[in-house]
Length: 312
Image (cartoon, rainbow, N blue to C red; front, top):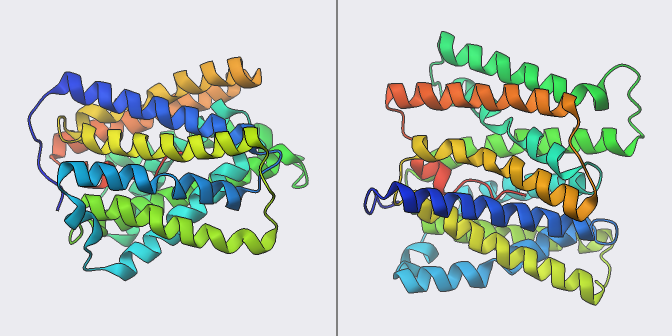
């Protein structure tokens, strides 16, 4: 099982969490930069494969290799891998079709869908405050999606398809969170992190039959770099929860928008629209209400958050 807080060191926890978000954002940009040439399944393979040695070394250094390799629920890891790999593949495909800030903003809807799924699948009670938060969040999602999926939307349009893929990926990530909440009841966090990378590598390898390409030296560098950065980011975000509670660290997830706007502008000459930002503000506000309410009720999500589906 995941360790309780090693010590309450909020400053270190925040630095680790923001660093993780920064690495995840750079990783997403590296995948986006290869998207014109590299199929999503191939990108998932590199992202997952090259995270494995990073995670392996980290577990060995912490003396947790035994925990990382032992499992009581291999079937649970398999299905977590199927959901997480699907989410990652759709996200990587969407990154090539939409601006980076828009992909990031739509991803903020995952906690909203998690609340909904938790009510139906886990029997969690949601009362007026969290229902209000969900409604606000869904309104924000509709606002962000309207320019892509609103009246007269063409399903053949690249941006429309990208929006659908990212929405489906966000829903899949919410299902991953529900699954992880159950998985960490019997599995060590190290095992959940390690076996996801392994299963994602194997599952993505199947897509070789749909047409992989030989990466150019530049794309190969970006793909390997994305895998290494993704592994480091996963370690950082997992480590951050050893020094600070989930309720304290949750708001720092939204620093990813600052990274996305900066990287999107500098690397891809992208700027967020006012409509997208307006929707994102509502989604972020709704997530803030959920986090505040969970803190009031003493609901702990640390274990699930610490091994959350890797960002893309």
